[in-house]
Amino acid sequence: MWWAAKRTLSLVLLALGVLRRSFVVVLLVGLIALNIASLTIPAVAQAMSAAITAVTKAPTVYSKLSQKAIASNKLLLKATGEMSSATGKLTKKEAALAKVTAEAVVLRGQLNSANGKLGKMQTKVSSVTKRVRERVARDASRNLGSIYGEALPYVGVGVIVGVTVWELSDACGTMNDMVTLEKETLGREDSSEDAQKVCGYKVPTRAEVWAAIKSSPQMVWESLPELPDLPALTEVSFPEVDWSWRPWN
Image (cartoon, rainbow, N blue to C red; front, side, top):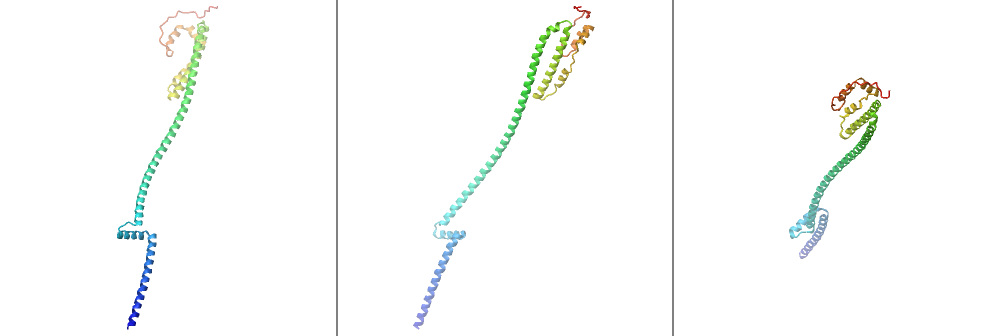
């Protein structure tokens, strides 16, 4: 009887040893698996960290790292937002700069075009004023030189007619130059009719002038105020003259 009880006790102890060893193995395997899971699965690591923190009331390495990661993420999000805002502002400034640059290019082109037109206008004005100066000097010299010729009897009529032809030709050229000058500087062409009128004057020949004087000097004198821009003249009476007489006959 004692022997049977001893045998039974031995079996129980043996069974308990096996269970103990099995429990230790299972516990060891479980701890290894949990450790691996905590390293590879964030949710498991977070759960273990929360459990340890709840039990020990002390923060774990994982919780500290998590807090630092959260803080870093917040800083990163803030920096990303600021960078995005700065990028937007920079894009707007670049667009404004591009617009200003384009406008500057257009203005530079307009300025170059205006300078080109101004240069051409100055050249034309210089050419016109030079021709006018030359005509004025030539007319002054011609008028002074023709005084004595115009004073000669009979021959002076031809001198007057020739000088007048030259003066009308110069006046026509001057009027055309003035029309060109006004067109280039003011863009007006309303003075072209005056130029056409001046250029359209016809100078009578020496024979026509002499015939008119011989036929009726009074009529010639009375017709003078009808000439363009000629002020009214005091009436002068002419005696009958025998124009066929020549001092050299």
